[in-house]
Length: 458
Ligand code: TYD
Ligand code: MG
Image 1 (cartoon, rainbow, N blue to C red):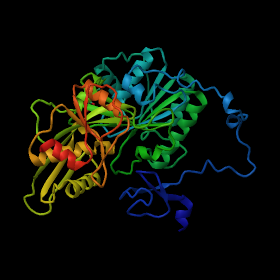
Image 2: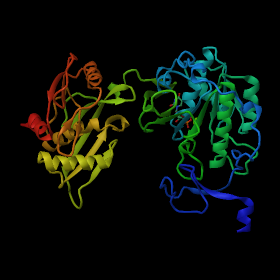
Image 3: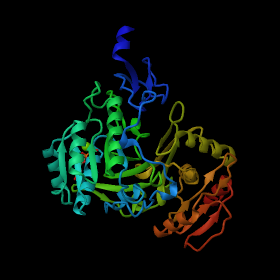
Image 4: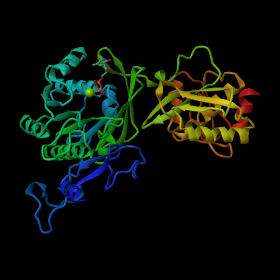
């Protein structure tokens, strides 16, 4: 007990950063298993002695909100990489702290080096701190890129003090730290990558960003065990969180905003990894529709909204007789609970039983369906596979399915239909009613699943 009191350690969850006094198998805050590691507790810098005076740098006179300059958009810095500016809410906000999370090898360093190249080519001084790779390794990567990278200033270090010192003397507009799990401050006893270090480094960089107006980008690897703190432990400290996703076998990557103090969350940018770095995919809807030649049973298209953008997505269903045991339910890109619910509604309200059938769902392109507006497409795909008859190949399906089997309208129908029309779709199955401005898409109102089934396969 005395030794514990002396070293002042606690147990931190490497997923969410929650602190507990005792070890447990499961984190009480985020329910993750085996993520607690023992670390020295950071000295509580936030707790000031009563009566202590704030340092001069922390003191500003109170102002009326109207007197605070709010020219946020005009002050943004554009990287000229369209989708990157888009996910940030329209460019980089000076003084902001942005976290880019993603699995190792997904392309975070590549993307940020390209961003750095674009910015420095546009005359903005940047500093790229590489704690993970040597300058030579970064140079070798840079040589593959089509952007000119000669003007990017690179610093090899893992000491955060050195980063802040160099940044203070070089005065870059944008500072990149790759990665936050490799930098550390000398004062903390814990190793680089621990929850305490990662948070302290992020907090100091946040202060530096706010004081100097420098925009700071942090790379954070999504970790699987190993006692290294993941990007989630930083989400509350930073202004903006971007996640870079994509299956290694596929060459496209999705950059998604999950938090943004300066713009919408859930924005999405799509890139393709080539042998000369990442390139923006100009027409993402085309990417998420499989090669659609001959119509196949079990394939349905919906028009979703990702952030502020409409996007066409193809849902594939495969229904087959279960060979033995309990029938399987496998869903890639769809919440399995949503699938279970839709199967139950189909059975109860449309008279189609799947209880003796294996059901597989796949969303093309590795996308995840987050909106209930895709329900109708999932049901249509299931009905089509069960009947072994393809759906009309020029149709999109929009609608949320209720427990009574009724079909509800989705938001922003017109924008979804406009995107569908742009991609050559001519008919839409959706909830009845609503005013219909000319979009070039013929609307078929369907009241409920029973009506849909009748309409499609009668
Ligand atoms: P990287 O940016 O190092 O990933 P992260 O920083 O997220 O760990 O990306 C590494 C992968 O990208 C690696 O498998 C090689 C591939 N790559 C290309 O396919 N083309 C390129 O032009 C570059 C630079 C990398
Ligand atoms: Mg990297």
